[in-house]
Length: 436
Image 1 (cartoon, rainbow, N blue to C red):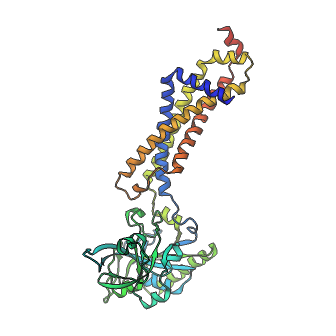
Image 2 (cartoon, one colour; image 1 turned 45 degrees about the vertical axis):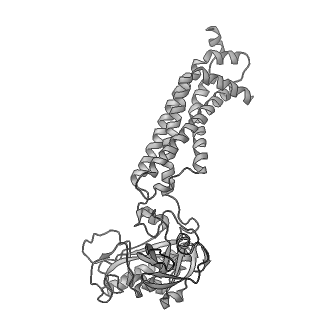
Image 3 (cartoon, rainbow, N blue to C red; image 1 turned 90 degrees about the vertical axis):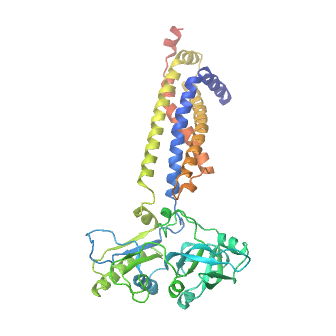
């Protein structure tokens, strides 16, 4: 029977190509707009660590002075070096890492290759297991290397290809800022999106980190800093704003907990730490602590811009309007065929057959609308990729988008056809036969 319904539907659609085209365009435009904005929204709301994002936390302490203080305000996003090193030393989590970013100059010994500038991440040893960084060769440095301020480095796959032609470079030397470092590990391609641990770079959608070096070593060598720096008190006379005793917030800190209870205990520990620092005179503001897991942190930092959320809602609202128009067109189309439907019913066709015939016709319109919507979505995503925003390069057409477009178009067309098909089933055969 499906083959018969299909032939009848094709014949009906060909009889009025203008009306058919209007319905296809209405569904296609709505689907194209909805899938374009939905794809961008899904890129921005992607979970960067799906297996542990609820267990990895970003602590915040209100260590500033009273200048600009407002009750109930948010504490600073960054920690002072003194606070970060104390938290790291006391090891209250399963894993913990302090970090900051900088720029370095890599000098190549072979050939006439010129030195080049490379962004670098200075961190502690737990960074790699806590964030699940995969390694192609070697291993990350240890806590003992942190203590010893070892001159070791882990490099990314892209940098390894550029400097060492992609081979196993463990044990080789790399000159960074005029100092020799030994490569102890090569990370496999790893690029969480968004890069939750450093949202300062293009909103968390910049290129992947390719160079990792111990935090302690970077401070021993007084290596450069690139990031946010907020100072409010005295500056360390020996090391300046990045010194251990400077009243400056610039260190990023993350901690992994085993359970929700451990997270609650760690928050209590942070509150106690703040109280002690306030009693010692380092903190001036009332105790104000935050402990956000990765989803909460991304929500607080508004990684998904409000205009993207609005565009997504508007696009689906526009799709709804397109479906209402399609419903009206299908209702007019089916009711114009009332004499034909009445004759079929008089010849013994049940209402279910009429209903199925109408749904098959709507399904064909939905498939055609999906193909048109897919083309529009591809064009829309291409336009998104031309924008000067960090996430633009990620807005691509994937298999999930392709399947979702056709599925949404089919479901939307069937939903739009449900009422017109039901209304067509109610045609009284006797009244229509009298009019023939």
